[in-house]
Length: 193
Image (tube, rainbow, N blue to C red; front, top):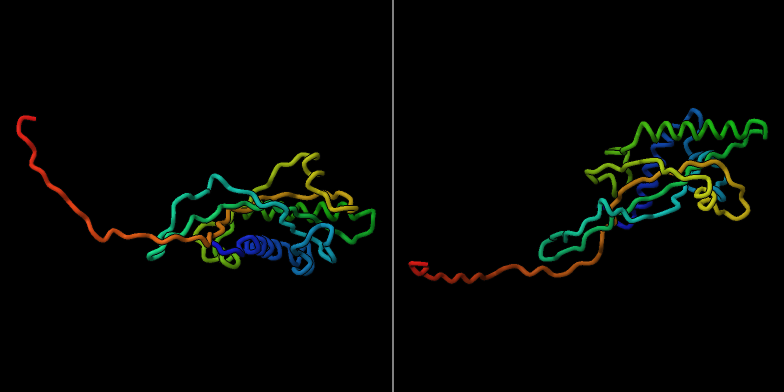
C-alpha cells in the first residue's frame, strides 16, 4: 500500500537503481542522473521523466479493507511510464555515440533488474511485500514523436519503461456496522414431505 507519495517513491526507486548501476562508470557522479524533463535537464547526463500515469486494471482491487470499525475503499492500482533520455556534453562528432552507450547501459541495468524489491525500494514502497516491476514499452517512431513534445527541444533517442503497479491508497472510509444480535427460528419439519 502507498500514500499519495507512491509516484515519487517509484521514481526515487528507479533513480536509486540507475545511480547505483551507472556510477562511477559510465557516469562519473550519481548526481548526474536525476528526475527531470528532457527539456529541463540542466547538467544531467541521464534524465528520468515520469510522463504518464495509467490505470492498471490487472492489479485493480475491489474489496473494501477492514480497519477496526471502519471500511476503507480499495487502493487504485497505477502504472507509470518513464521517459529516459541520455545527454552528452561531448563534441558533436562523438555526442550521439556517447548517448547511445549511456542508453545501452540503462537498458542493461533495467533488463537485469526487472523487479525491484526490499532495500531497492524507497519511501512507502519499502514497506510493501510486492515488488516494483520494470518493463520496456514498445513505441514506434510516430508514438515517440507524439510523446516527445517539449517545445523547441529537438527529438533525441530515448527509452520508455513502465514501472508498477503501485497502489495509491484511498482516504475514503465508511463506518462498518457489526452484527451484535442474531435471531434464529427453529421449526419442526413435517413428516411425509
